[in-house]
Image (cartoon, rainbow, N blue to C red; front, side, top):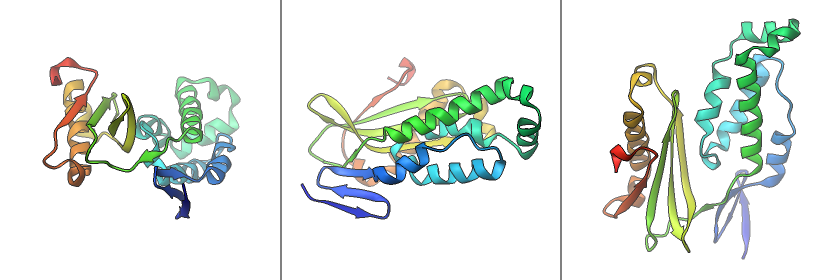
Length: 190
């Protein structure tokens, strides 16, 4: 099957994927020592967030770091052992791993069953539109974002509903007038 490289992506009859050569350079990076370095890394990841199911869930930790945090990180080695930095370095490593394992996003096929899978954490929501291929859920579109300050107070079920609404809104043209199955971690939505 022929493939075409276009705007840092590889497009084929099977779907859309990120170009492996570009991803290799991003996964080789070490944890940044400055806020600007971290912002540069997150900006690069933002371009490929469509291939990462839980981008916002992990990126939230990194977005919360400030210039003062980095000053103390560089000047005081003991500061690196704090819980904030443990979470930050773990989130950084998880994002790099997820980037290295980006899946191919399938083209939407109206003849296959559509399934939306949603997830909510304390500070972010995510969802994915999938199609069922031989009893396997194949991703079509990932969607995630950080929660706004007023949304942080929502109950976990309300956060999952918010994630579902975001996916349905984002994929409206594909899903309008079609039955959709929703998978969630909480039975209240069922």
